Length: 102
View 1 (cartoon, rainbow, N blue to C red):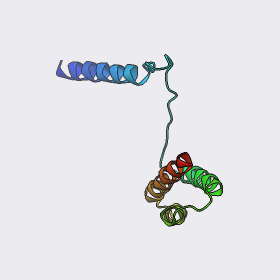
View 2 (view 1 turned 45 degrees about the horizontal axis):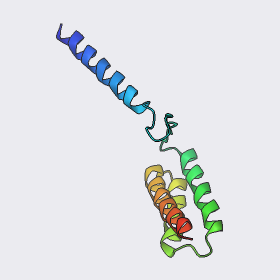
View 3 (view 1 turned 180 degrees about the vertical axis):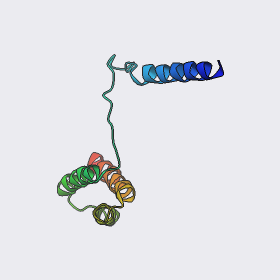
């Protein structure tokens, strides 16, 4: 009997969480597309491509961005995907901030 209540409560919570995640955006009335990211080598390369594309746009990327990008690429290449992803995401944030300032 206790097991059935636990499973019922867990199912209810999962249903509520799914409903909240799919609720429409009040500003647009549409659901935001879900973006699933994982800590895979492919995602590392995807982030590296994004960083590289933005670095071509920015006239002089800050040294911190260059260091983060280089370190992220090295870590992804050595199988340290989480650390590489963290550095590449930080580089992207800094680059995007710089491109919006122009």
